[in-house]
Each structure stands twice: as structure tokens, then as C-alpha cells.
Image 1: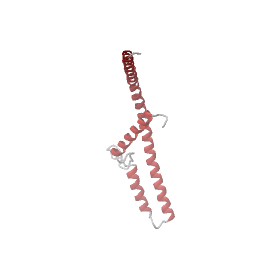
Image 2: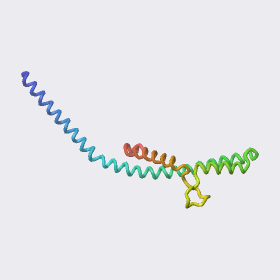
Image 3: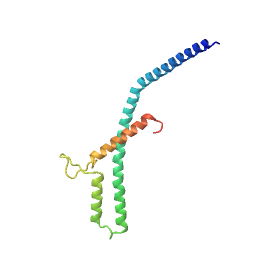
Image 4: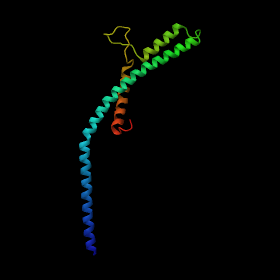
Length: 145
């Protein structure tokens, strides 16, 4: 092979490599263009599932916390009645339940009605953040969840 033939072969290979690389990037772009709406739809469905699951677990967790705290107070009062009087136990249980479960502060509710979110701004923000993180994790790698 002469020097001119080597230069021609090198130029042909470079053009072929550029064409193949361009074709690969074009195919990747088309796959990304087609898969983006699919992944957005999957994320939306996962977000709806995770928001429902997060709200249910949040509410159940609150009830379980109140039950555990009530059980601990009952156990303490059973072991040592002189240390905590019944009035102190009632005050502690009511205060704890008020801050965990919350009282309804809407005008349509009676004064003694219990609400679900005692601090709605903080709790709903946390629920949404947890749901977004969970939905993203389920969409990126559904085998891990």
C-alpha cells in the first residue's frame, strides 16, 4: 500500500465512524423521545400510589403512637400510683393526643371533634415530599421497591 492509499482508507474509516456515531446518537435520541412520556406516565401512577400509601401509613402511625403512649402511661400508673395521679395522666394523654392527632379548628365542626392533622402545613408538606421521593425511586428502579 502506498501512502496515498493509507490516507484515503483513513478518511473513509473516519467518515464511516462519524456516520455510525451520528446514527447511534440519533437512535438514542429517538428512544429518549419515545420513552419520556412513558416514564412520565409511570411516575404519575407511582406518585398517586405512593401518596395514598403515605397518607394511610401516616395516619396509622399517629394512632399507633397515641396507643403506645397511652399504654406506657397506663403501665406507669399501674406500677406506681403515687407517682402519677389520674388527673396528671389525663392531662398528659390529652396534650399528647392533641398535638399528635390534632383537634378540628374548622367552623363547621363541633368544639370536641378530632381532626387528623394537628399541624397541616408541616405534615402535608412532609407527606408530599415523601411521596415524591418514593414515586421517583419506584420509577427509576421498580425492582428495588
